Length: 120
Image (cartoon, rainbow, N blue to C red; front, side, top):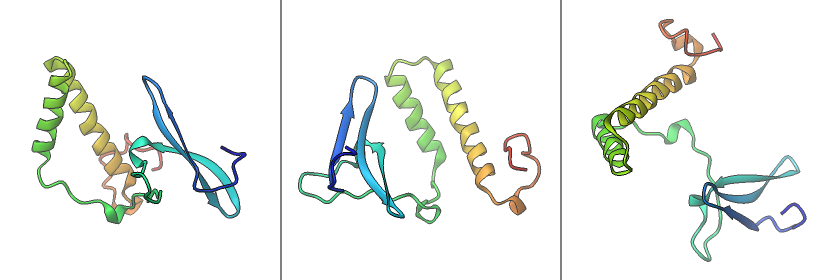
């Protein structure tokens, strides 16, 4: 892809494990090849654009219990037993707490979660 001069060229790679979409991105005159999820592939004839997610784009989840029930259902349908499902859901909850605590500005942290983040 680096030899192609057109910026609108897309490349696709997929196998049994990985699916990637490659595109060119230019920042300050420097061109680089970036990979993204294949879900960003536009429909035929549409213009390709990847918009970065910003904090202001996020919305609070109204019902987390419903979301975790859906996670549990999907994992159950995939053949995971109860212990595996609960371990996975616990990891998601801990990851969510970690992410919320580490993304909060330093002056908003309450000090109770010091063991989570390295930037204290």
